[in-house]
Image (tube, rainbow, N blue to C red; front, side, top):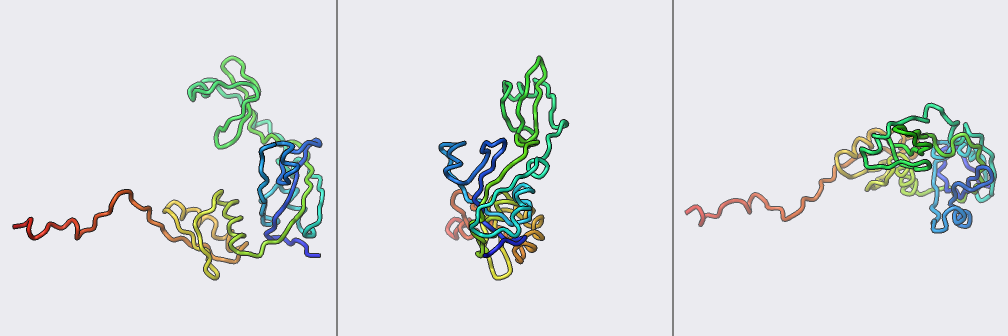
Length: 230
């Protein structure tokens, strides 16, 4: 049977459990149990590259394609242990200045992280910046449904993970050429080595000029006519 090696791009079907309860899944019948309106999305990752929690990532190598597995993962190899330093007391005025009325159980985005309000006492708000699954042991049931062979599909998956979006790109032999606005070049330079290592292709960038709104007028059209000069 075909098995998975480190740095193989694979597609996974999975369901994650903690304390016997499902917390995440892309298997339709399991997903419906936590989100009746949810639609499963394929998960494509590169094995051994930290694109899923460490315990699951480490379990992929050597597994057979199409076979279902179950793995138990301690908290430290899942979403990490709970950290006391991530439980913080924040002045209430920080919230009220943003026209937010905090209450216990409220979850909101702060400092590029999700924070849960634990208590509101007087002018102080105790918030928890730990991942909700931090400190919890996990169980994953998973099946590796296939290995990817198409370079464009691999590149799309890698862009989704490292860029958090998929830019406009084309593949030319041993190069992947991204086109877009100037700020995108920063991402290209930052992740060149990653793409070379995992896809064996050089990442390049081509500036794509943004179209200006309205009719463009060229120099010839702006030039006064002979009649107007007489």
